[in-house]
Amino acid sequence: MNLRSPKVTASSRVDVATILDGLEMHLQPIVDVATGSVLAAEALARFHHAPGLRADEVIAEAHAAGYGYTLEAACLRAALDRRDELPAGVKLAVNVSPDVVHHPIVARRWPPDLDDVIVEVTEHRAHRPAALQDELAQLRLRGAAIAVDDVGTGYAGLLRLAMMRPDYVKLDRTVVAGVRDSDAQCAVLEALVTFSHRMGAFVIGEGVESLADLAALAEFDVDYGQGWAVGRPGRDFTPIRPMVVTACHRARGRLLQRRVDTRFYATDTRTATTRGMHAITSAMYNATGLTDLHGAAAEAAAELGVDVISVSVLGQDDVLREVTTIGEAINTDGYELRDFPCTANVLRTGQSVEVHVNDSGADAAEVALLRDSGSASLLMMPVSIGERPVGVLELISRRHRRWTTHDIAHARGLATHLGHALNRINA
Image: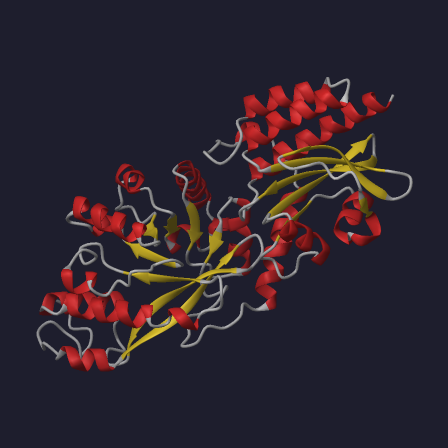
């Protein structure tokens, strides 16, 4: 054991009470890269009686000294005690060593209700994978989400990771920090994101050291970001700085306008297949009436996995009227364009937009409309005849959805073919 600190070493056998007296939990935010809104705050242990050691080193030495389980149980309790301090809708992420999760002294610390709690474990350190799986299954039954930490460090087997079926995969900082400057990191990041999404897991990028790193995460379809550029660990939970939210919006804005060829991207379980969408866009292109348009839209909704698809056309009275809607009743009254600035901007500029109800900077009118219909996320594409926008295509999800590069590219293809179809139908 390396004697990095005179106060905490295996050889000195410092009394556990001394360590616990200096224990304090700090909170670090994890944000949605699409909106800058906070998904969760991770509780991180700080040991004031061991200033020369990282938390994982203190815990490792505690295990070597024989009181590791007691210390981890105390950390878990201190972390869970911060739960009620968080704003509504913000989850609490807690760390537990995989070989400790099922130990009785730790198991007693878990409350019956674990809704809005993310349990983070590091899979590659598990000596009893089967016991870990069983305990994680029990925690899930109480409402917890499971995250696997430090993915990308070279130790965790991808097959074992897939068998765990985590809700979140946390990419190690060695993969994320400075990713724009390394082709090797880009390749690893893209592969891990594709792999995680195919498992149905959200991806959290750790080690975001700059706003450039945060923007890069959006380009690689990473769902959430965490690091000093997002927010440093602190004793109290603090709001995200406006510059971080602005950086998220700008990165997403660039992505929404960028032309992406889906042939060069691997698909995952949450996105449509290129072959399937090609058949649908061909059918839409050849539509000769609203019945054909409706049928193609229904197939697109199923292929894209969205709850609602709506196609609306702007009339000469500046009222936007739905011509076909899949997933809910068609609105026959129409929408006054002056009441929806975001939609008006799409028609004026020909640029795509996304709206999320958890985005504080989103258009209030669009957010209200989403809330009224029980929806959470909207992707809106202009529909043009020639160079003239004549309507909008809307993809709507009941649950929060970060629209992937696939979603955006497929929606843009649909909108393009819709323009051809509407031109033919009007003629």
